[in-house]
Length: 435
Image (cartoon, rainbow, N blue to C red; front, side, top):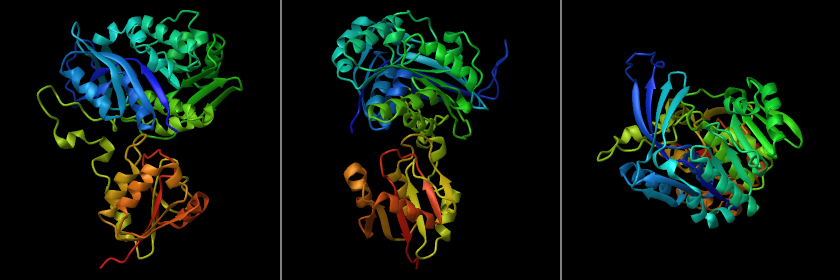
C-alpha cells in the first residue's frame, strides 16, 4: 500500500562540529570533527517517511543560494516531492549550528532564514497537497501562523494531523483539539504539561494532561527510557531498544517518519510505535554530508559511519568459516532471530543498509549453491523480489511460506540483520563448495 504524506516544516543546512565537551564561557575549543548535513525537522521527517516507502510532499522554503539548491536536490534524491519547496531571494537558506559531544548528546542553535518566511499564503498554495494527504505532519521550526493555517486546512479536509511541537512554543487553545497525534520529548512535555517529566510514570501523567486538551493520542519520547503512549486505552510504556548513542540529532525525526508511515498503512498504534523504535537510530549514519559550495566531499567521508564497509571483520569471518551446505540468512530489520544462530547486526536506521546492498557484498565473497526466499515476497514486495532474483540469477532459488522460512532460519550458522523495512525482504543462502 502506497502512503501519501504531506510535511509542512523547516529545511536547514546543519553545520555539525564534534567536541569532547561543551565550551565553557570564554573558552575556545578545537572540534574533533566537522561535517555539513541536510537537516531541519521538517526535511528530516519527510526523508524518514520516504525511506519507509511513503510518497511524501514537502512544503517549505529555502533561499535562492547554493545551500538551497543542494538541499532541494537532496530531498529529490531521497524520493521526496519538493515542488512546494520554493526559493526566496530576500533571505538565506536556514542554518543550524550543532555541537555534538562525545556521549552523543547535542546542542543546537538555529538561524531560520527562509524557514521564517513560510506563511499562511504559502500553505494556501499547497492546499491540494494537504487535502489529498493520508496525514499531515508538522513541527514548530516555521512560523506558528503557517502551522495554524495548515492544521485548519487539514482539519477541514478530515486529514489526520501529527504535530511534533519542537521547539516548545505556546499554542493557542483552539489548536489542541485539531491535533490527532501529538509526539513530543520529555523537555517539551515538561514545558507544555507543567510536570517534570523524568521517567515513564511522570511521562504518563504529562501525557494525560495534554490529551485532556484535545489530541486523541499523545506520545512522549524518553530517549533511552523508551516511549509512553497515552490514548483512549490509557497509558502504556514501550521500553527502548538497547543501542549505543553516537549522535542523537534527527533520532526523533526518524521515529516520527516510521510511526506516521505505519499508521497510514493501517497498523495499530502500538505496532507503529514498535516500528518507529526499531527505525529510531540515534546516530547520523544514514545522512550523507553536503558538499561545500564549489567543492566536493571526499568519497570516503560520504559513507555512513557504520557502513565504512559492509563486510566488516565479523561477517567476513563467518563467511570464511562456512562449510558446504551451511546456511547464512540475510534478513530485514523485523525478522525474528531464534536462539542458536550467530547474530550480526548491520542495521543503522530504516533502510540503511538495504538488504540488496548487503547481499551484493556477501555474494562478492561467498560461494552460494542455492537460495530460499518467502512465497509472500513476490506478491507483497515485487520490486525487491525482482532485484533479489536478478542478483541471484545464476543461483537456484526456491520459495517457502513465511512461517516455514522462519523455521528454516533456526538451522543457520548466522543471521545478518540489515536496515531493510520492506515486507518479507529476507533470503537464506546455502554455501557451496569453494575450490
